[in-house]
Length: 227
Image 1 (spheres, rainbow, N blue to C red):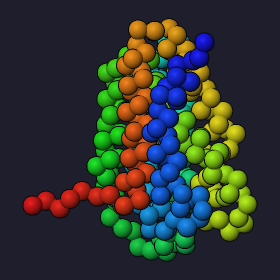
Image 2 (image 1 turned 90 degrees about the vertical axis):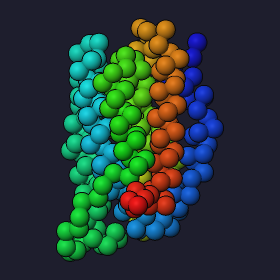
Image 3 (image 1 turned 180 degrees about the horizontal axis):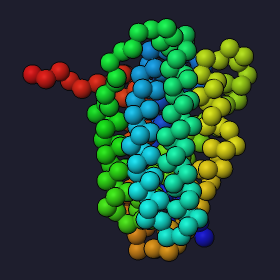
Image 4 (image 1 turned 180 degrees about the vertical axis):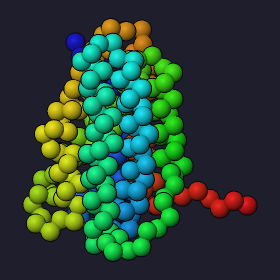
């Protein structure tokens, strides 16, 4: 019998196909993505990671056993330290036009970024544990899948401008963390079978937000001017 995560992955095949076909990821994989677009993405993703870390911390507090709690809490810390440092390092490079530049006004979350983080935090705080686990899983799994898919091309080009970003999500530690997140979500589904419809709905919403986040980054989405 298939696991919940297998069923959720299959149920979101069309969404994932749309993700694979995004101009943002196509250009990133080819190394042709405009630096200004990648910079906008990194700024928004850094903001997103703050919200994602809060959702993971809430999930850790509601975990059913110490092992699950330790994993989600460690993941929250990783968002706050490791990935945030990666973004800071990438944003300080000459490629992105920021090395030596004077401090700019801090970016604000785009509508899509704010919507996604608000959804994850609210779900982690108020939905059953199993549903919250399903909601945070696509961020792991979609990035692991994209990293593995783009890695061969990025590795083959010695001057690929986004090689470090791709390598981070193709690397074994991230792939293993994704497998662990899947296993914990599957265990939650097995313990609470009545929650599976809500889990699938949460997984689907989060997968759709993954699609929209990259789509918004490509057009450098911002709030419409007041008035």
